[in-house]
Amino acid sequence: MFAILFASISINKEYLRPNYGNLPFIGIITGSFPNFIAAYTISLFPLKPILDKNHKYSRIIFYAISFFIFIVLTVEELKPFFGASTQYDHYDIIASGIGSLFAIMTFEFFIYKPRNIVKIKN
Image (cartoon, rainbow, N blue to C red; front, top):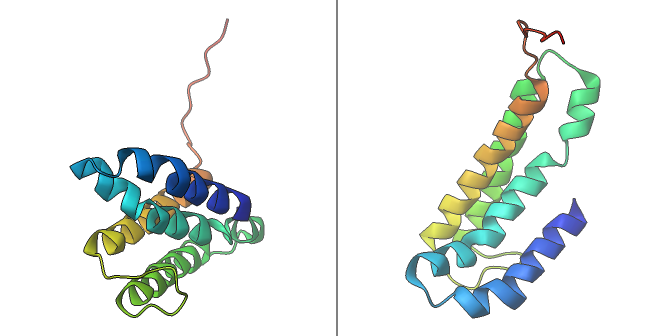
């Protein structure tokens, strides 16, 4: 997960942002992408242990972790303490929220078990 986080942010910083950052809509996306991918990947770190435990509160635990990551990234955007953010940008907060929501959607995808699957016979 750290490799995916590092590689995607590096590709965005070195290639996508310099080449496409001057376009209005694409500039917003490339500028906010690190917040999105950070919220998404960091929220997914506990996915495997939570799925392995199969606890009845797994969903609540994962939702709480994703919300906590969103709050930390929002506070970091408002008052930088990691040094990653240099100026306030509301698009970064939105991207962090979307990343956390995508992490929740990924979690739901992994725990969803269809009950009525029709098997096709050859």
